[in-house]
Image (cartoon, rainbow, N blue to C red; front, side, top):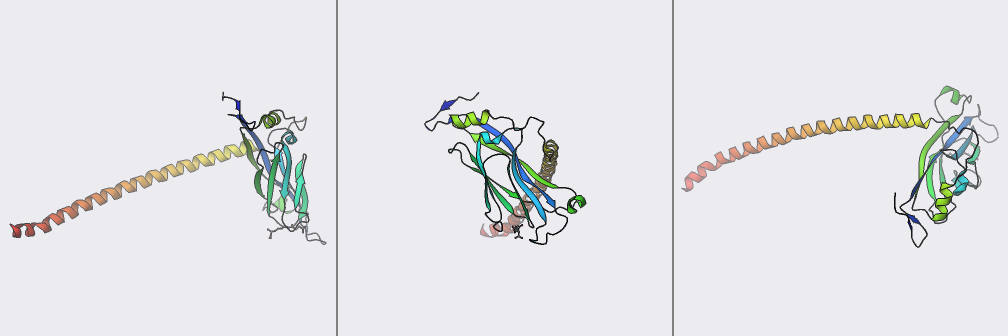
Length: 227
Ligand code: SLL
């Protein structure tokens, strides 16, 4: 258990609070290009809690900065759901800036590449929505007493079971397996390279020995002529 003390800024030393969250977008093809503006998709970009909790307990607002082609591209959302729904024709990077209820807490920025297009047939036909979302964590180091209270006293958002479109447990397992496989591969490559290095070193030593021998032989007549 960390020693809990409070410094002049009112921060609780030795405390770390981690808040998992999910950000991303869903999108759906209209099925055709819209005559009047050339838009092809409706999309929603969002920030959600990973576990069922009301983020407004510790999040003050979230800025979603859209592409310049959108009118008033700085969208500010002050309460759940933290999302922006729009229509458009193109993909771009959305800058998501999360502000906290405690002004001492630095805002956190995440970048999300808004995704509209995917090769799956049902998504291309507009029969099914596309979902691209990521898991991340907000880490609060030595929060102030006020922030700590806000972080640890959140309320649930919904009364029902809370579920994501993405199976993050499955993704975690897949990611872990990929990391393990990559680790194994790299370890094997390192071993092989070490083997080759050893071989080369041995060759160098052999050549050095050879050079020494040749030099010794070369020196012999000179030494003899001096004496
Ligand atoms: C590009 N990366 O340069 C893209 C930009 C911009 C998307 C995509 C239009 C919105 C509107 C829209 O979808 N912009 O007209 O209101 O190709």
